[in-house]
Image 1: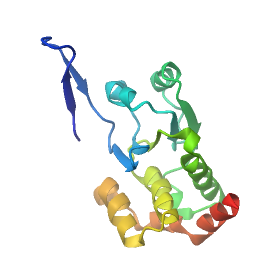
Image 2 (image 1 turned 45 degrees about the horizontal axis):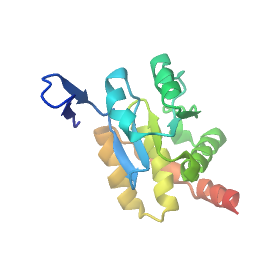
Image 3 (image 1 turned 90 degrees about the horizontal axis):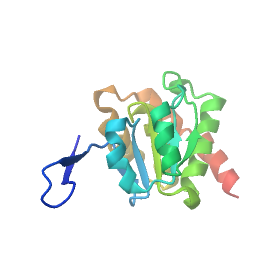
Length: 176
């Protein structure tokens, strides 16, 4: 995890520490980002990004201190409760959540956007991997760049079922 340290003002000995959320990374040309859930210690890092939207992929309620960050920075929250323990079962609800997430991500009015789940791994990986497939990325590259990089040793081959052609077919039907 990287950390950015800046002096508050020239000649001031106080430091402003900018700590990114877990698994923070740019997904696409610095207008789509991904991460784990942010905490108050990450706010100074996130504020200069000028986010317009956040996609939240957990079933738990969004933390109150994060809601205050959204309010004070005029950021729209898109909560999509995706159960990270059941994603491998690829039910209709999971497909709908992914398609809804892709609609939000691909709508430029929502950029700059942050996509995140609790740790920035499984749910976030699944949405980003479908975005990559829409962009015609090779499956091997998607697995290396998204799953193995962010989930590390905890990546699950069963999560690859999310790349079901049906999800992408439904999304393309939506675009027409």
